[in-house]
Image 1 (cartoon, rainbow, N blue to C red):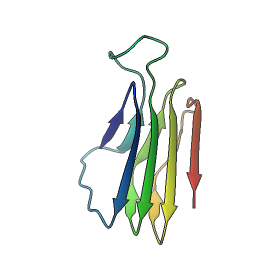
Image 2: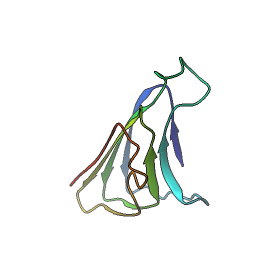
Image 3: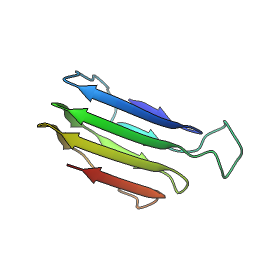
Image 4: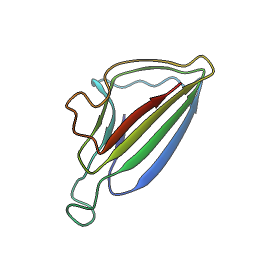
Length: 91
């Protein structure tokens, strides 16, 4: 659903219906853009009254933060391969 590379980005969701067919909700990683080794992503997903499902992934030069507020819920895994530079959930 969200693919972040070579940039810093923030998404704010409130009562949004997301329809995606894959298992990955967020993938923060390096790709072909930018300078190799310095082209990871930095992504914050802020939610309010939101229901989410899916994996949240980040590679070793990327950061991801999930903020669940005001009744938001999420089912999935965060940094399941333990590779992210940083990965966090705030409630």
